[in-house]
Image (tube, rainbow, N blue to C red; front, top):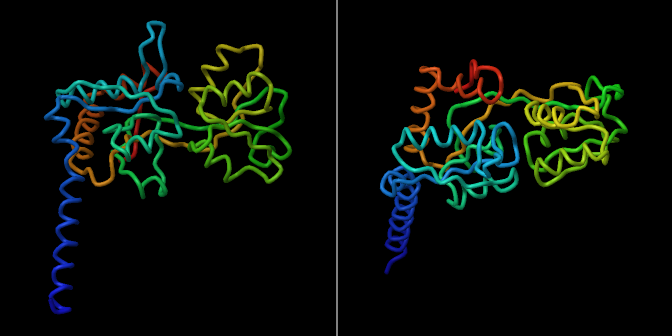
Length: 263
């Protein structure tokens, strides 16, 4: 075979491979509708977004949103518990079709997964005892603070914490909060919702809000290139926003409406 012919064959093979990959990348929605089941990754350690109730079943805003989307698709929801660290890998390895787990959007994550429009509000802050004189990032100097490894909380805290800050990173939110409650650290970086639940359980700690790290609405994670599924979920979110269902869910679990959320 001549050199040009070989190049021609290789080019055709490459195009065929690309075509196969593109076709594969668009199968999620079809597979879900065919199997009548959708695997959705949800948190179980992040109240009020996702936690295990007294009946030992997952509940919370993210859990309700997962069930809402499954119902709108006309399929059964298989809820897959995940941690902050493994939720994106679960999506990449197709252990989950969607991730609804207080997922913030950033450029690094957009390189490996796709996102729907936002579905709920979320903000991150620093919390600590009233006696701690902390009002801004500079005040963290020389102090210890717990945060969940790999989370948006971790990324935002790392950006602003002075070099002398002792950042104690833990693998999940329960461990992060426990470190603060047990006195291993002086401060806590987490969502207002998680901090609120912790303060309600531990009023003796005298914990208060210190300062905001980031306003970070929640988005739903979708496999890279799964545009059919992403666009269908966007339609469901848009309809829920218009009908008021998003606001109802936010009021139920967060005590305030979803309000204006980014596309």
